[in-house]
Structures are given as structure tokens and as C-alpha cells.
Amino acid sequence: MAKKRRRNVDWQAGIAAAKAEFPDLDLPDEPEVWATYWGEQLAGDETFELMGKPIRDLLRVGNTPVRRGSRPDLSTAEYEARYRDLFEAEYTNQRFPEALKSLIASTEGVRDVARRSGLQHSRVWRLSTGEVTPQLHDIQQIAEAFHKPLTYFVEYRVALVCGTFASYLEQNHEVAVRLARALEAERAP
Image 1 (cartoon, rainbow, N blue to C red):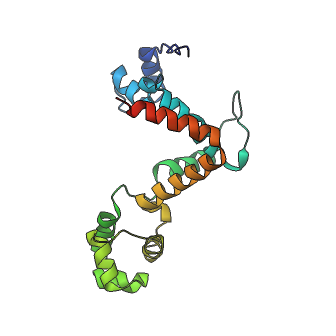
Image 2: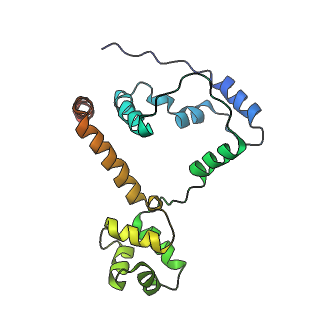
Image 3: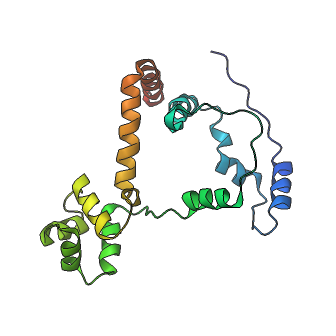
């Protein structure tokens, strides 16, 4: 297999252009920071590239065709909506017990959360200590009690993405085989 040639990126020119376009932002001057952020070092990583295609396919909601070329400018309302979706979405990166403890702290205690969620007091306590693993029903009840989307919790997001990716691989055997072989080759001594 021929090795792919890495594309040379003029980071200094890119950084200068970004700073000129967004003068109010405190953007870094070091190309290494930008290269790491944008994943340039992964350009030659075969596993990363191999996983890219199925992930891109999964992200095409409703099999929307890929549009090439210039795009029309977004209206202010469209821009603000996309910005909110990306940066103001309500979520936590805490594991469920820590996230639940934070939510409990905003209430009158575990009994209050149990009453709001319809879960037993002991179940809420055991979930908050990490003694038990949250089930989908637990996550749904807690999310509803605090008016949070299910995607607020990292466990739900991971399960959703992994489940969707697993379904994709079950339907696309050749991709699953190639990906599995690439991962095995990486693990081999």
C-alpha cells in the first residue's frame, strides 16, 4: 500500500488569517497548538482514516447528499441557532454519579430527587455513590425530573453513539472487517 503524502499546511498564514478575521479572540500563536487542535498529526493514521468514512456516513442524517462548493451565508438566526446547538447545549462531562450529586446539591436532598423522579430513595442514593450502574430508565427519570435532555448525561451519549456505530458495522460487514483488522494490527507487538 502506498503511503499517503501529508499535505503541507502553512500554519503561520492560517493563524494570521484567523487572527485578522477574529481580532477579539485570544488565539494561540503556536502552530503546534493549531495542528493538535485540528488533528493534523492524525492525517497519516490509518485507523483514524478508516473510521472516518463510517462516522461521516453516520453523520449524514437522512442520507443528505454531500454538497460541494460554496455555501450561501447563514442568516443571523441560523447562525445563532447553530452556535447554541454547538456551544450552549446543556450537557455534562461528569460521570453519572458526579452529575447526579451536582443535581442533588441543587435540591433539598436525595429524598427530594427521589420524589421528583419517581425512583426509590435507596436507588437514587446508590446511583449517586456509584454503587450501581445507571440503567436507561434511571437516566430518563432523572433527566425528566430536572428538565434536562437525555444527552445531558455522558453515559447516554456514549451508549447512543456506540449503539448507532454498532448497528452501522453490523450492516456494513466489509467496513467492520477492515476496521477490526486495522485495530488488531495496532495491538500486535
